[in-house]
Amino acid sequence: MKVKRMLAALGACLLLTGCASLLEREYSVVEPHSSKFWESEAADILRAENHQDIVNDLLLLIGRRTESATIRLYNMDEDISVTELLDRATTEIQQETPVGAYAVEYITSVIQSQRGYDEVSVQIGYRRTPEQMQAVVNTTTVEGLSALLETALDEGRTELAVRISYWRPEDHQRVEEIVHALREQRGLSQSPLWLVNYYPAEETPGLVEFILEGDELPLPPQEEEVATEETAGITEGEGVAEKAAEAPESEPVEALPEEEKTAVETGE
Image 1 (cartoon, helix red, strand yellow):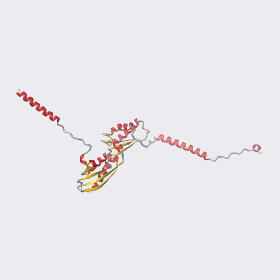
Image 2: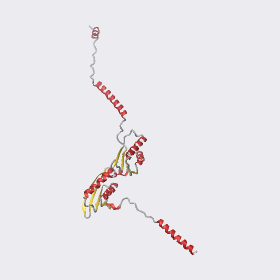
Image 3: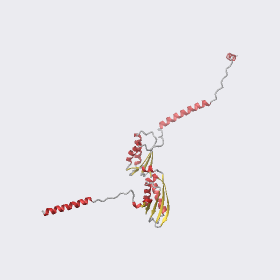
């Protein structure tokens, strides 16, 4: 009996130990931003120690559509001036990132040297409204564009901006196919063309913008020739009518007395 009780107790201990190990789980907290970039979030003061930190700081500000903020630069590389470092970062934002190329009009900065750091006052001008920036949607590949465009049409929207996570060189052709198929399906083949813009560049886009209204589609060549001939005919007819209208009217012939009429008729 004692042996059985000892084995039972040992089994219970092992069971409890196993349960405890099953209940032990690591966890992490996901925050809306990395706290390492903020010196004082309440005052919109960020910090940076290298080029990439500056780029990340600016992207955080653009994501919030912040117009003015302060960045404190610590331990900067002495081989590169702060001005040059900021120029490189702002150029990268506007020319190499989708959101910067899409939404930012300009970025200006004023530098003040402080003890232990450089303080940069940043001003960001936007060419998109807050509503436009909030309306940007996401898709993993271009195959999600069809459903997003259909929803935009159903909602009566005139534009759609889509972030695309994965882009292949052949996806330009795929975008054209999706747009053409949807316009045919919706009976819009003769409606105004849609304008498609790629950001930051057409070769390597990360964001595609659709303007769902534009110039009228050109007529097919045969219809264009017929239209030209009809226009020419109308113009020619109008010219004849105008000439007739411009021609001087002949003077009315006065009625001759009966005696003169008789003389003229008899030749006397």
